[in-house]
Image (cartoon, rainbow, N blue to C red):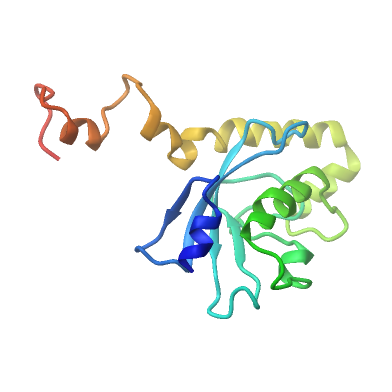
Length: 174
């Protein structure tokens, strides 16, 4: 399973409990789509029989999409759930399957009926709602990316306390 993580080296990957079967991947919305600029934390669960059995994929932060359950983040994607092949790998999921899902939603097989109905009834309003969700739930800080890179004045991270010789006056030790 370690090779799976190495294969994903172009992505920010966060393992769960130092295991290789459950982890999170930072996923950016595809260019030229209403999801552009959005950043999602995507949960990946690999079954024991992976790559012969498909991974389980789910969005952690909210996304407005006909084929993604709004509450659980579960993804309805045939190529993952029904037509998975051991020839596919996780790079295919993040570079091909998920971008294609966001670019070409299938409103006739929805997990989110509201999104599907709006997409069919009023596509402009649907795209506006997608963008609102991106603004509200899919900013880099929603997946923890900003905490590591930010020089924000909001609140110093624990790393700021631990790595600095100049202690921050008035702040308790972590």
